[in-house]
Image 1: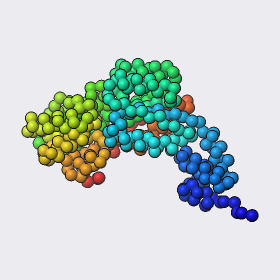
Image 2: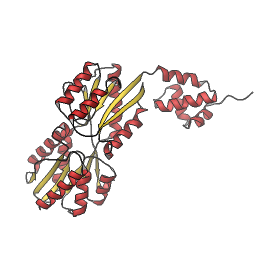
Image 3: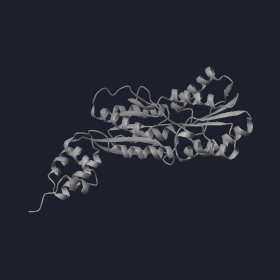
Length: 341
């Protein structure tokens, strides 16, 4: 009589370690849902008795449709965010998760409000990056009326209507950028500040923190009027070149949101090493700028930690577990310098 396949054969067929199979079967530690499904499929193919047990474990977990709306699919930061959302989905505990992901092509409040309203019926719980605007607030209130919890990501919006916020402490982000700028600036002079738009609450807080720290600790550094770059490379590039030409005593540039590629290109092109540059996302471009000495510091969002916290928070809200209202999850930024990349 043919020998029944054992756990070693099951692990090989599923392409996982023997320890992972053991954890999946005995529940000693959490195993990703997609990994459990792969082991269950291999068990069915081999005729292993674990197939029924694993299938039952998968069937017993409730399905949760996680809705997420992000900005600008083509930007490196949002590409990385989307990839991390997909990767972390399998680690969502206690549920069979499905990601419903959409992208806004612009900062227009009407577009974001339409995308949010369009999520009704397509997901069980929703999170988004959005500007703070009455149209967006109306859309969140509409979704809340249907019983859906909505979370703001990275930048606050619809306060009083949304369920919670997950991201960085943006006031501290600005103060940390100012602390480094005060250290890096070579003498008194002027500083440039770029924000994505005046409706980004997170950028407003970063500007507030940046200015407040410098007023107190480095009053000889004058922060110029904030410039709106719509988080685009070209606008930031052209504006940075103009600033460099206009201000011979420019000592630093802080890009509080997206569009940093333009500032990097302008400083690389003009060869102005006395100008410190602080940006807000670690990408291939900013990593290279750090290595070259063009950028001084990157204050990056820890996307892996953020996505894990997001799924855990959204799961509790979707399943009615614990107190969902007034959730505030602040994550510390990942700080990168030229010697750390």
